[in-house]
Image (cartoon, rainbow, N blue to C red):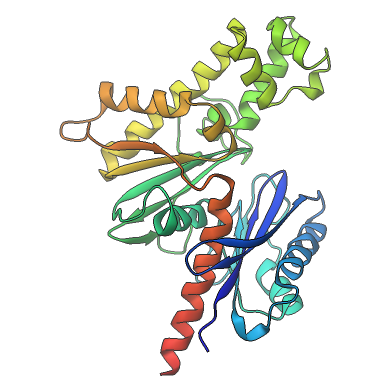
Length: 323
């Protein structure tokens, strides 16, 4: 019997989303929970989310579970080698989850599973060469080259957020300096907004946060910008300008037909798309200016749908090897 469903889990810095997904990409049941702070509590939350969405489904109907993590994944070995924003480095997420949910499990980088989701059922359907960038707590993404996901030699490829944006730059959450994530992510925007408000700049930012610096988040900054707050607009303009120039580097290097921009912040603020289009028009090398820059189509569902697609792929591969 061909499995009809797979579970997709999208683990983010603030929330864990999971869904039971049909082969055509439709999510038939889902759940969302806050991401815990402690590493094994995160694993327990993933397990609980999987068990919740498969409840009542016969095991023969399930292909398995795919889990997208905001981490550097050795895809071949299925290990978490490094995780900037969550304490998962060295934790055997794959084995711990698989042993508890009684399903085949495959883990991958969250940006890569979003790429797979958008290629199968979203904005990049039919594209053979494209790049997806997710702008959220950090900056993730992935590459789809020559009609297939590109992960690199060990599966670490596509760490777009850790491209160099400034040689003498500020410290990135990963510990290095000058990376794109340190300038254009939600974390960077919130850091800079809180610093500005602490120096009595950005009146609308402070007012919308009720004068509580710790309450300032990306929604606060965007709301202030839409009111015309000059500091909020400047912060967003700076973040998106750096982001756009980094995308030009990708265009010049890879010559993709498409750049897909997603993630919570990337989808909420259109400046990420606008700045990318402007930078490509202004700076891309000859013959590359026609690259399309489009918003992700699946929104918050991209990670779930892509992780489930990965689980279906692994299931189908196992079934074919038995023939």
